[in-house]
Image (cartoon, rainbow, N blue to C red; front, side, top):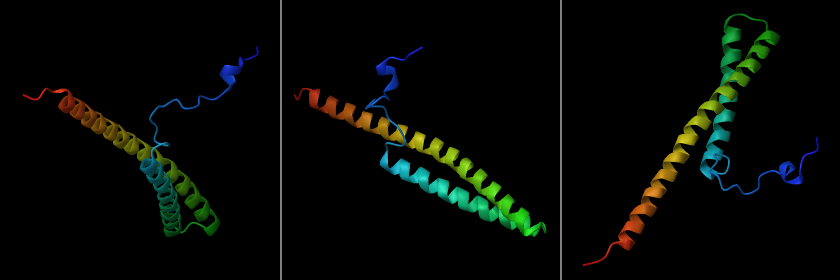
Length: 108
């Protein structure tokens, strides 16, 4: 079955709030992914070498640890960034409501 043209086009300018669209959150998530991968790699390799595993196997275990650290810190960073973005939106909404209430209140 053929799709209609409007179904093929990606949604442009949905206006939704996203972590990728938030400048500080996007940078923080990228930074956390990098540190997670690096720390996982170092920790996995160190622990494998401490267990007297051959170097090739230790490096493979370090690589697996790096992948695991990357994914784990990415998930944690996204969850934290999501909550921070929601808190910022709620705070801004409260500011707008307070400003609107101050503007609309009659002065006696």
